[in-house]
Length: 224
Image (tube, rainbow, N blue to C red; front, side, top):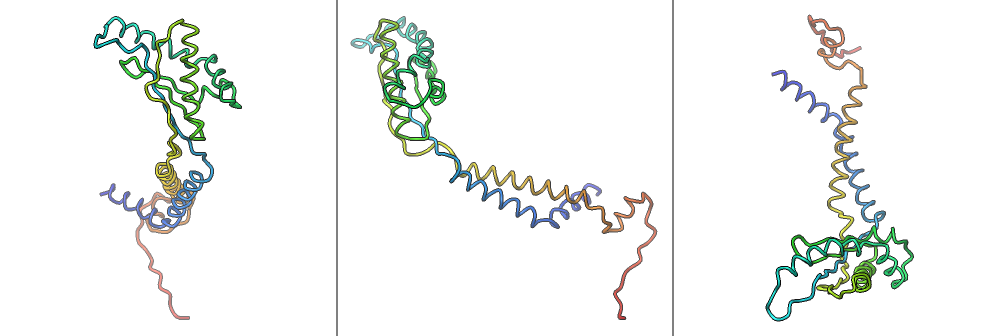
């Protein structure tokens, strides 16, 4: 019974200040929309995939070659992530970036249990993302030939330009902003209620004085 009363009191507090909660919710929603559409830059992504190891001649596939190629992949990943490759891409594409800045845009990873390396680039310009991804692939293949003295890497799928941004995500951003606004509104509601020391009900008198209430004198507004 006491829990029901406490719940009713909480709901009553929320109901009393519902305009404040709604205002916080709407302000956060609008802020989320404005920031997403007008402040955050769109980010585009392009990827290319590379195969380590020459295609097998005929229909024969040597297990030892596959295992060797998979072992090479981890080494090749580090070369693809190196300043050596980054500097070559910057030079070829005439990018106004440092190697460290360029490498932040690039993700190089092995496709699980394969001889395939994936190169993914994120950039605020869709065309440049594809150019960098393909530039990394070309520079990487050239450096492998120079360093390892082999030509065993080939492009499976070159990067293409995607005009659909991967970020920001308007629905997710506005949903998170609205939720934060709702939480802020509820918190502010209870905080203001906590600061409010005025006596409103007989129960408030009992809580303040810590004494039982013997009776209540009704108030009637009479004629003068």
